[in-house]
Length: 280
Image (tube, rainbow, N blue to C red; front, side):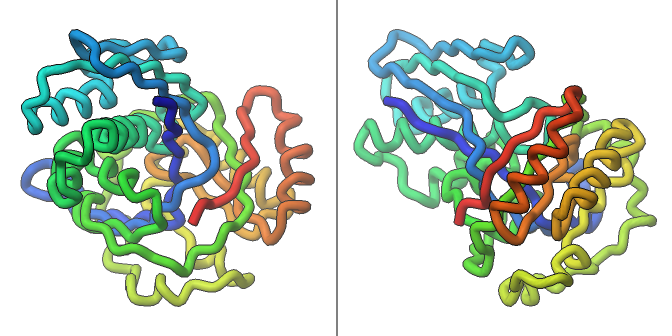
């Protein structure tokens, strides 16, 4: 079976406070984009194994895709394995959720291949046990995520806006960003999530988008702000870092402007630049 695992971007990300278990409560609007990893699965194998095209991604049982397969077989009692062939197109350590998306794609594929032995609610719980944003990728629909990111409210107001994505080719550790975050400096409870569902495309969109982690991540990777400035100079209606960084996206009113921006921004040869759309 050959499947695809999409990247995501965060149209806003608010950190609402640290929890006793060490995680943080957040509120974020997540959307998938057309940039995808490719995954090939070989079933009826004696064990779980993986090959990955990216040298920095673990090709062992610590890989989230392998962990997903392990959880599935343990839960169902199916005594088989699977070989996972992972072709990485989504940058690693970039705030795009590639590892979580891989895990969700493997869960869904295994459940489909074996005739849906796991109900939707149980699959959601299984995904959440692997990572906070893995459940989002089960559905691949725009959603406001709260809690640690696993409580989803789907949002049909998002349009298929053109996206230009810039990866500075510097990986940023999520753990390092949260360690440096000063919660007293974030504007807690700034989002009324009810307003999200009336979101329209207009010139005020840039005022709506924000990321509490952006300024902290930019201290680690100054190219984040350089990329944001470059996107805004090249006609992006709004630009923002996604997740905990280091990727930055720009939203455009039409694909013509996005293509023109791609030609300008990609002159910086130290950055990877991707032209895509929000998938809704």
